[in-house]
Image 1 (cartoon, one colour):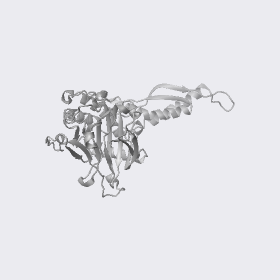
Image 2 (cartoon, helix red, strand yellow):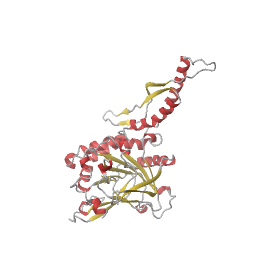
Image 3 (cartoon, one colour):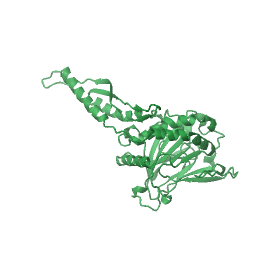
Image 4 (cartoon, one colour):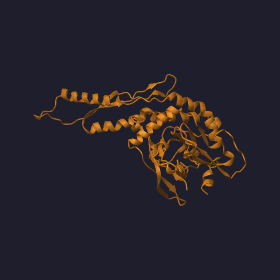
Length: 383
């Protein structure tokens, strides 16, 4: 049966559009609320970014503390003799609070990832991405980001796991009668990276931001190639950072968005970046897609057309570091094969990290569309 992944609920799809500034702003909210609960004045903090002259994508997402306004919560604080503290004393306390906040916010790290490189890679490959999604239902490349960047993103993913952000992953199996059964994925752990993770993973958060600010519009601009009004959007987002442990852990066959509008799930495009430098041929963990045989294309570009309308074939893609994989969230059945089945579960070098970002559509008619070239794949794969 189709498997619904960890993050599919309508609640998760209602987040604010993730510019890096907005993602980081969320991590500041908890701090401000904490200050308010302690009383006194809180200085509202804005986030500044330095921008490229030729682009609306920020070249640096380092937050800059900018006093915007003061939010006051009055407390009847008194001195020992019972008199209300003087205005000067109150102002002194507020000044000290602002200084502490400025020190906290100025400690945000600057990402080292090249935002212009990510944007350039997306824009230059947009026509090819659009063509492959239209003809084959997926697109992949193994050199989307250079090895040093992949190693950096992996190290930040490990930091998030060390910090306790990951928890056991689970899915929901949708039964033939429409009921939903939850089950745990043994050996799989995941988190939903967000602005609260900026301190620990600034480059990972920045990558997500640039991808979402660039890819949807880049593909929408290729409507002549795609011949469909997909209307991809970055008004909402959904993301998951997952690690599959060695020793045979795997994902069962599923479709990311099996029910669509019925449950308020508008995810249309799945974007996976693999963070596994040095991944070997025998390390397993391949993502296997189920496609009609005439739509199958191997990794070196050979296209087979055997005319077998109802015959399915599989495409196995290694999760090697730097691979970007895109496919239609509501149509392409896939599974993850056993990860390093002969290795020890404690071999951290064989942990399989994958960062998935889902892009929604604003055209709900494009979800589970009747007559789609790939619409019946789920019926063929699960029969």
